[in-house]
Length: 115
Image (cartoon, rainbow, N blue to C red):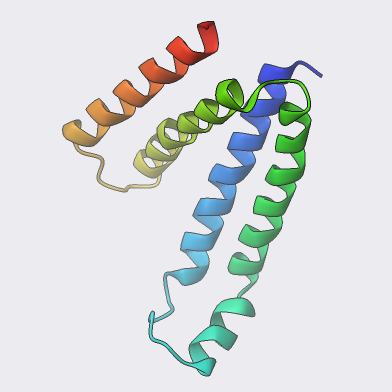
């Protein structure tokens, strides 16, 4: 499989993991204690998020086997853009300042990818 596609797949899986973790934690009060930990780690969305992160890491190994880390890792910055877009689609507020920052990150990713 094309390495760029593999990298994007890994990033998409990580973005999905982030939103799954958010869904799982939305109803949990972040207080220290065994009950909170039990609630977190038995939540199906939190468990799915961890599973997706693990899958994304396995896919990422394929990227690292073909690219130098200094080229591959900046691609992870695309996750910021994908997360902002998905966030907007589900109703999160994304300011112009945040979008400007995401645009700068994407510009950097393009520069690194072309090097």
